Image 1 (cartoon, rainbow, N blue to C red):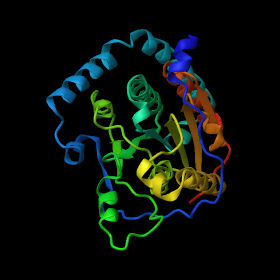
Image 2 (image 1 turned 90 degrees about the vertical axis):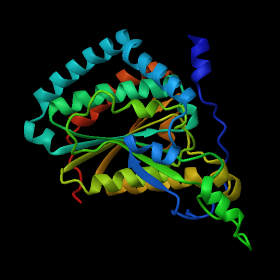
Image 3 (image 1 turned 180 degrees about the vertical axis):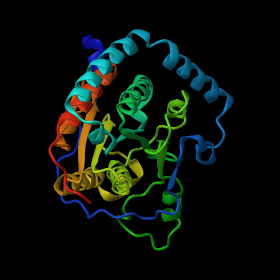
Image 4 (image 1 turned 120 degrees about the vertical axis):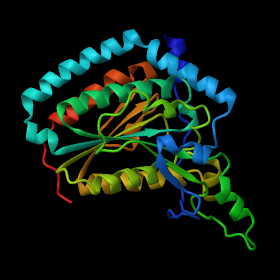
Length: 308
């Protein structure tokens, strides 16, 4: 067990705060927002090798987590019972829950597999109670800054501290108005060529913008992540705290406005350094139970939110 903890624990190597430039974006020209089924348009059609890896991961997702799923499903049944007792149908149908998943490269393997399985169980739990549910993911389209960095490198003269210098990829796995999705809607999350860099601050802004457009009175946003925002192209030109400072500012804005209730779960990472409502788990296998427990806490906390 100690070996597994060491294997999945994220090193605490974040830099000390200093002078950090104000957040800016070099260009949005190459950013993409699309549905999971459209990923081939950005990542190019999946290779034969990656397709085989994806199929193997999907088989593990479907058949190798039976005991883990059984335990989580029992917890979901008990949570459903408590939520039904303590809330009304009107309260549930007037609530929307958005789940935002970090698609950084460090999530590869067990973390993303169990994140997908957790989301499947959590979505089932929420939808059957009458809640609206949205599932989103965030990463970049490529490594090393992509087209944005190439464009910046071609500039003469080249501007210093250009701001965020990469191509964002925001993915909609499930929109809040969707009917309950087919069994394979999360399969693209397991693509070997998907997970890259993570720009958390802008991903939160995107998710909250979508929630603000929703008619439900109560809005919840749950973030699943395994570390601080990282994009080498951006940090190399703007300093090591550029992205984490922006994330802190975005979170403070959301929490101060109190329109959206924000929470996070960190996999081997102390997300409470950013989020007021946060839980840390040591191993990816703990994600299912922790997510259900945190959702239950959020759903039964009927503290009124400010309206849009």
